[in-house]
Length: 300
Image (cartoon, rainbow, N blue to C red; front, top):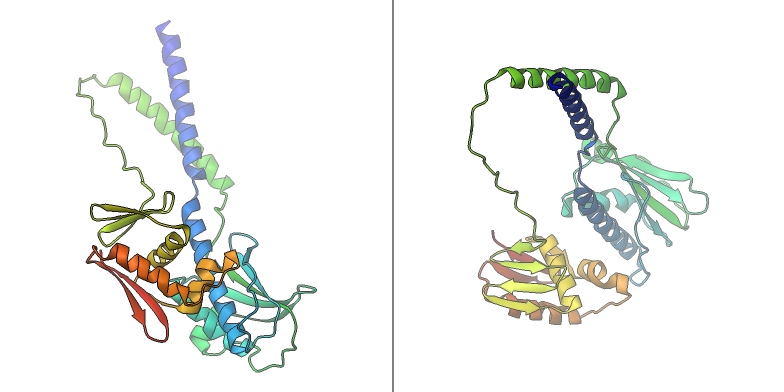
C-alpha cells in the first residue's frame, strides 16, 4: 500500500513540474496593459501628425479620422486631403518623441482606393542619413492612408524544439526532488506566510495628489473633489503628459474631438477650475505657455 502511494505521488509531482514549466513558457513577455498603453501613445502621436500635416496644407477645419490598429505592430490613419510628404518625416518623428516612442518603424503612404504603396521610408533613413526616399517627388491630390509598422514589437515566439528538453529536464528534477525529500529527515519549521503583493488601486498619483479615472474623484491633501466628465478627461490628459508642453490644438483634439466638440477658449475655463482644485498641492502647477498651450508640472 505504501509503495502504491509513493508511486502515485511521484507521478503527480512529475506532472505538476511539467505543467509549471509549460505554463511558464506560455507566459507573455509583454502585459496587455503595456500593449494598450503603447497603442494609446501611437494613436495620439498619429493624430498629432495628421493635424499638423493638414494645418500646414492650409486645412484647419477637416475632421481627423480615428486611427486604425491592424495588428500589434501596424497602425493606420486616413487623410482625405492632400498633404506635403516632405513635411511628414520630421513631424512624425517629432510626434513620437513627444510621446516617448523610440521603437524602430517603417512608414508607408498608401492610396485609399487600392491600398497600393506610393511613398515610404524607414526611420533610420532620417536618423542616419538625414533624408528619406521619395522627398521632392510630385504627389497628386488624393486620399492617402498613412501606415506605420513597428519592427521591434513581436508576438511571443513558439519554441517546439526547446520544449522537449525542457520537458525532460523538468521531469528529472521533479523526480530527483521527490527522492531527496523522501530520504532527507524532516525538520519541523515554523509556518511562514509571505507578504501578499500590493494590489493596484487604479489611482493615478502625481505630486501629493491622486485621481481615480473610474470614480472621477480627485484627492488633494485631505480634501476630495468629484470632477465633471470633461474636467476628468482634461486632468487625465495632463497627467499622461506631465512636465511636457502641450499645444492648445493638440489638447482640444486629444481630449474632446471624439465627442465632436471643439471648446475653443472654454479650455481656459476648465484649466482654471483644475488650478483652483489643485491649489493646495504645492508640488503641482498648470503653467500657461504663451502662444503655445499649457505645461502640467508635477513633482514626485
